Image (tube, rainbow, N blue to C red; front, side, top):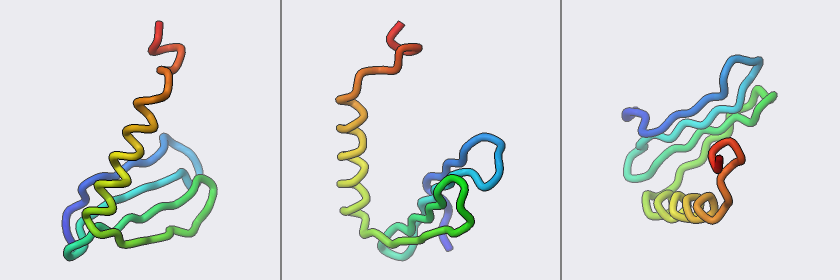
Length: 72
């Protein structure tokens, strides 16, 4: 198993949401658990698909107005 390249968890709480992305051969393995559930789903994505998905996520969030506390 390779090193984790990205991981995120919610603050304190029972069964928080969880995402972990790590290298897995020539792809990336993504493990996700939705908030309040016990099951962790894993998928493998080729690097190109992960990069494409990351770009789409960034474009989506860059198109959104900042939250009020950030907008000032």
